[in-house]
Each structure stands twice: as structure tokens, then as C-alpha cells.
Amino acid sequence: MASLSTSNSTLLMALVVGCVMMAASASNFYQDFDITWGDGRGKILNNGQLLSLSLDKASGSGFQSKNEYLFGKIDMQLKLVPGNSAGTVTAYYLSSKGSTWDEIDFEFLGNLSGDPYILHTNVFSQGKGNREQQFYLWEFKNMESIGVPFPKNQAMRIYSSLWNADDWATRGGLVKTDWSHAPFTASYRNFNANACVWSNGASSCKSNAPSSTKGAWFSQEMDSASQQRLRWVRKNFMIYNYCTDAKRFPQGLPPECKMA
Image (cartoon, rainbow, N blue to C red):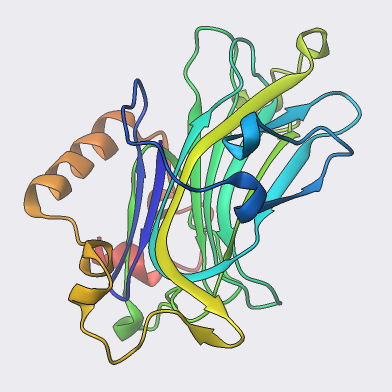
């Protein structure tokens, strides 16, 4: 299950891998999403309870949410491409529009059978990204006090896509997509958005309303135990961190890296 939670102070990204038990969502993919590209490779099935994307040598596919969201907690269960998924990328992200867009990315980089997926994350704020981390969880704090833009003012839609990226996705492009395994398929279910919907220039969450009326997600932050677990994950499973890539930033690391 992938989960995104945004508030004024902290952006939380979480990924739970394995067997997930949860209550069935009342949402319906017909009501909440549009398949935007893929020429029939994206399908809504089971009376709107399941959405699948497929990739073959001719094209991938993708979808986007009908609503735009400003703050909220958004859950989705994803079943990634099974078996030999090398060269494929399943992207799941939030993004606004325009040249100074905000974006919150999950990209699942496929791999050979038996090798683990790599989770590639990034955050864009006012059109600036370059905040990649791999492999697991990370947290992007609000550091506007030191001049680092934070994605909190632009409403974003949910997007997802499945596409070929065998020039870089698996072992830096050394392992290519094996098209004999096509079509590759990823599927989605149990979407739930507990969020502020942006419509006609206004948020469904009243700015002067107490946070207790907006749900627990609105003031959610990581407690000390969660932060300790995050540090353990970074130490043991992170394989790339932009904040330690001095060669990439010869003029100096981004300011938020100095606060970590």
C-alpha cells in the first residue's frame, strides 16, 4: 500500500510491502479517475473496484484523478509488475500544472526476477526537484524558514503510469526490457482520499476551521519512534541520497541537506 500524507509542516511518504489487510474502500475508479493515455492498455474492471495498466513494446499507459488535492492523506494498494520487470517503471505521483509546479513522486524501478524493486522518490517545489532518494521511506520537512520552497500552495492531481525506461531504470540501463514477457501489468485497488479537494479556486477544508474537524491526517507528524525507524531504514536500505552526492552539487549541497 502506498500512502501520501501532506500538511503545512511535513510531507510524509510511506510504503508498506507485503500482505495488507484493510477495509474495502467505498471509492470507485469510474468516479475518481480518468485513463488518460495508452490506447486501451489502461482498464477499469470489476464494476470500478480495480484499475490495471499495461505496457507492451508499442506503448505504456496511465491515469489521473478527476479531483485536485491541496492537503490530505491518500491511500492506494498497488500490485507491481510481477516476475521479470527489468526496464519498467511504475510511477505513482501527485503533480500540479505550470512551469513552477509541485510534485511528489514514487517511482518503482523494475528488476530481474528474484531481485527487489527499487523505490525512487523525488519532491518538486515551485518547479525545482533534484531531491532523489532510493530505496525506501523518507520525509521532506518544511524548511521555508531557510528559503527552501515547500509544496503546500498548489493543488495537485494524482497520476500513475507504467512505461519503459530500460535506458536507466535497471542497473543504470545495463539490463534491458525483455519484451518476450510483455504485456507487463500493474494493478490498483482500494483508493481512498481523506483530503482537502480543490475546486473552483477554493479548498473543501475551511481555513479557519479547527484541525480536529479535518481529520487526524491534518496534523500528523512522525513521533520519535517513527523517526528512529526511518533512520534505521536509511542506514540499512538506502542506496542513493542526493544529500550525500557532492559531485552532483559542486557549488554546495542544497540547504535542506545541512539541516538533516
